[in-house]
Image (tube, rainbow, N blue to C red; front, side, top):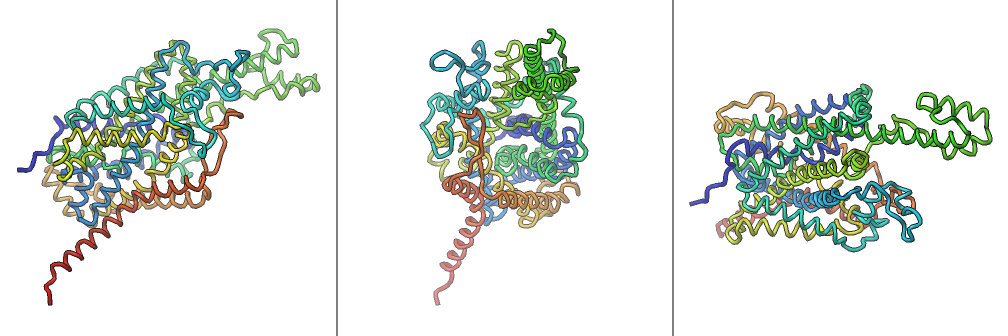
Length: 592
């Protein structure tokens, strides 16, 4: 007798698992950046359109495939066609790459969380130099938050060529992050199903607390006005539409095989159409909600920096020109500067290089995403809040919940095909397979804790998944619609759930979504070709800022391997199946 497939305790557990996986760090640190870059409120127009024509249909497709085939990604696509097993293998390879570097973010979150209990926060002030005569030179040229990130956390090297050794503190945090992930996935759906209630719901509790705090901060309205003021001209910008489609695609976690793995543990009669709509809507709502929180914090930070700048300029002018205390204000500063420049030209020209140009708009225009937003911009704002330790603990705890929730999906995409394999599962128990996957990932992940680790992290983050996932999902939609057959798939879904598939889903699957993916694929490919030599941002300690450098030849080779190793699985597996079948046919042929 074949062992019965484990199931979720209830459909709510499945929905929570999908939300916990889909709602991740991208919602918090990439969507606000895209709003900032592409017209604030007007960016929501292409975002919502892409959700309807791309996000929902593709999410429903993956959930339906998993639920119908009741196997992980490799088995599911092999069932559809033996020539398509490479699609599942490609998904597992991409998920493996993602797991290797993604958990490093959780390690950094642990590091910051542990340091959040100090008073004052270690990133709030610059440390003293070696002979205690002043502040550290690198910190003074940069800022205390940048110094803590680049020097204390990463201890970053000047370039990719200088690898340096493994930093033991981030390495220990990475071990802890993998231990937490292992404990969460130890018993498969049994343990994951309980953990997802926390990883899916707790970030919302923290976001609500942060929203209440954010709206009460001085200058929060400046940030919210900046976000919600639409720049209609951006709707004519093709990059706004391309980035909206990309954000929807990657934030839902399509193509990794995680959604197929989660859906394979459902009852066949489960209404996966309803769940696809719920998950995609919650995911998009979270992005908008997180943006409101982020922009209220942005507003506070920008206003704080702007007012600080005004104070410094006012003090400088007051002392230099013996002005009356309190005479200079934000409203008359520019007028007084003009008068002083004309009345005392030589004296003013001496002072001019030291006079900063204070602008609230330019402070709000500073667009940052990714680790820069999470570990530099947010910490900059947190250090200026009252009871900063509390807000720091809450923020990094939320990052951890989001990161661990996504990791549960990533590891499920790897583990489900492995545990489905009779050869592997007959020799090793589930706990041992989980342990081995975590151990291998953790060992390779130590590369990202070296002095050049952050540069390797950026390589994996930028190139390990982008083109590969687009190709995987394109082949998935073509496979379902034109290899398995749309009518056959439709009748399967009707037999499973008792509900007919509406024309909207069929039109999207058969035409609109694949065309959209092809256009995205062409855009990214042409963008890589037109960019020329690929570059990266390196930290220059002597200047206290990032500088642009060309990737060395071996890094370009690694980028090529990352893209090829997953994408080539699809044609190679198909070729292998073809050769195998021809050989079998040759063996079966009668001898003349």
